[in-house]
Image (cartoon, rainbow, N blue to C red; front, side, top):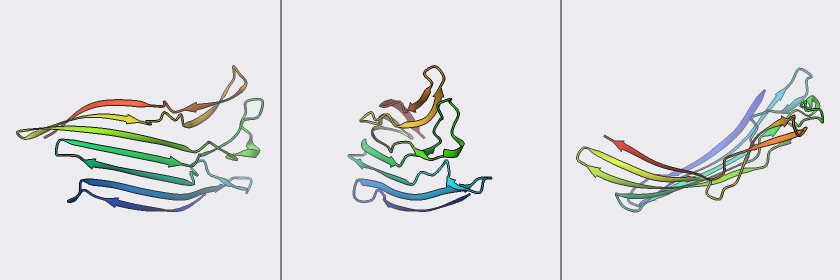
Length: 161
């Protein structure tokens, strides 16, 4: 197999300004040559990946952060009408693009020698159901595409000593 690509990353750390963030853009190709000597797209070929995340430190106590992810769809092998994947069409079809937006709010409480952090984290704010895999459904005799969960809410507590 052969994999090649590049990644560009830019980061802004916390400093005298209360903003921080990181942006990355990745381009890659992953190909392989099978025993039949035909070069094909590899299963991990996800041509474009774009991530941007950042936050704003409102005060010592409060912080807001967000993250956006975008990627082109991974390749997969389609199924024949009998439920067997088509050997002639290995990785010839791609899942749709995938993207989501996350938002998080942190609140800190400072005590002598330790800090309590509580947070609310909402992943995939706009509820996009990205396709993650495919399998054959023998009941319906058709491919079934598995989707991500949609919106995911997390509430948490952590302590720093």
